Image 1 (spheres, rainbow, N blue to C red):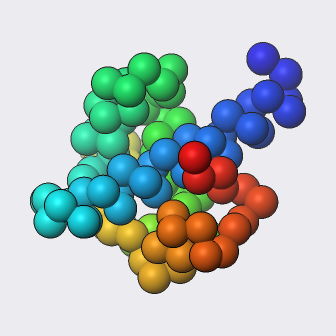
Image 2 (image 1 turned 180 degrees about the horizontal axis):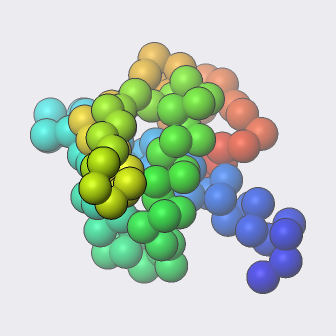
Length: 106
């Protein structure tokens, strides 16, 4: 996969993640964590790695579209992302009121 394809793929995955978090919010489900999102994406046949999911969540947090709690295991240095929730800015992107060049909502 070339660089342009990888960028396009990451944009789509960011949009899918925002949509999944939004759907969970609408259905008043428990907040997701990175492993739950990874499982959902795999169930939807997206060939995404666990590290990709963590990176995408961190990207969306940096953009202000998601909030989450970052938990680091001091013994392994592994990072977990928990209590993921959509922000007001994220809602505007999911509802297509606003757009962002790094997020593609399908």
